[in-house]
Image (cartoon, rainbow, N blue to C red; front, top):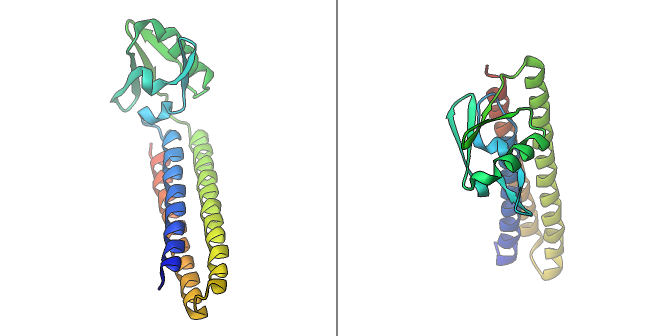
Length: 187
């Protein structure tokens, strides 16, 4: 197999791996009943006029499975953190306790668990679409290899390997979904 063919397959693997990484980050934001600092990813606070990630302005811990403690580096921004969490509409209310904010994560109802599973399935489907788009983009490049004097049987082999890579990454998405659904539905 020549360098052009290998480059196409490497590009496909990298694109599909990026889709899987993005999926894992998105699924980490979907809460599964247990407190997780990742639940607050994406919460931005107004830090003296600058939008800042909460994780950049405070220490976030989970002392037990039902609570999150936020300890800001600067005690003067507790109000801004409280407001940002409420504005993020995550489904819980922080409680001010001196120099920290405590969030008690309420248990999930059966209906809410099903909604979260549905949201996880949507994220997985989006990742599968991204994987298939990566395959299509690389497949277009592979078809152009014929014009660059690459033998037709090698092009067919690259197309087959590309499909195998795609199938592997789609199967990885399904495994990740099964794990997340199990995590969500566990009471």
